Image (cartoon, rainbow, N blue to C red; front, side, top):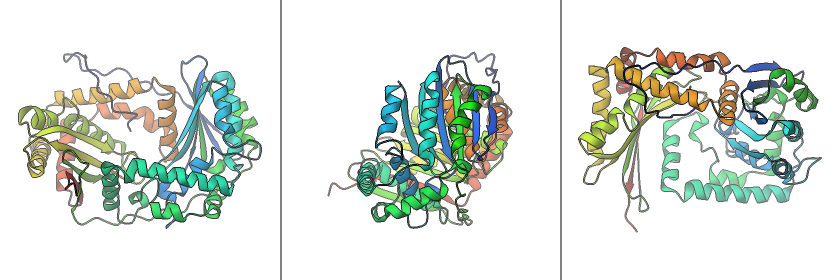
Length: 442
């Protein structure tokens, strides 16, 4: 359950004991209207990070209406019955704070970092727009154009963006994770204000929301602020409908794309895996450590493909376990000049097979676990990172106990665990392989 992947150097190889990891010390309570609240005390005098998480994201957009969750995220910065368009950001800026939002497949989140003595101002503004956004046709059409332009810049005009979108569509047969977070362009263009507003009125409310405040705060001082602000919002917020279940995958899929703007070919393979939320903590910890053994500047893939055999310019491995309903273990490589994609593929699989059949030394596992654990601990030094980790974990169904115990779980992973995990990946029959190549200039 990774906060972030950080490679740590400079530790002694003779004493591979990771730094100690205490629990976050988070405190929770629930308001009368059903909204959950979490305070994460941190030694950051005078500073807090305030974030509201809603238990739905792009994967919960109604069929044929992809882009609704992201559209609402944009419209939330327009006016309410008590604020004018854009005033939310203006007020926070005048008070020395910064604010933003994001839409993921599972979560829609709104956050701000501000001085402790201005926290109630942020909370009042956020509580106001939880149910009070005013939808205006002129704002709606203006934001539609902004979103289309965002999609053009991030996806349609980017070969790698288009390719990622195609890979995700190939990786999911029925589950809406196969849809782009921003939405398909033709569906964005067809959305009506009535459809978007109906979704907002139905699902935005305390029952679907989680507030996390991290920094110079504790539950005792946060509770009265929450009751005066979010506590006045009437109870509401219908749960989103259940998502379609993904059927078993029975075939290997290869997605190939050519584009003249691509300078060098790229190869990747996704192995289906259970996520932090759909699997067990030990499964996830094993894949996180396996990714640390294979990936990174000191990982097996880099040493074998880039340094020793010189068949690749870059390599990596990554456990994509942050989605609620399932994830992937990914390996990737960029072939060196004169090297065919198939040769790089064979070399990557050979390294995976070596782990599965020959195993790894316990010392190598300890080093990987050390790097991972140290990165997790150091990431906990930032108020926004901690708030995001707590909020996104809880809203997807995780627990504070999951967070507090994960580093110890990582430390307990053995070489036998990694060999078993590598063998299971190699036995997977339903992989998704991606090949992006330079194309003809025409």
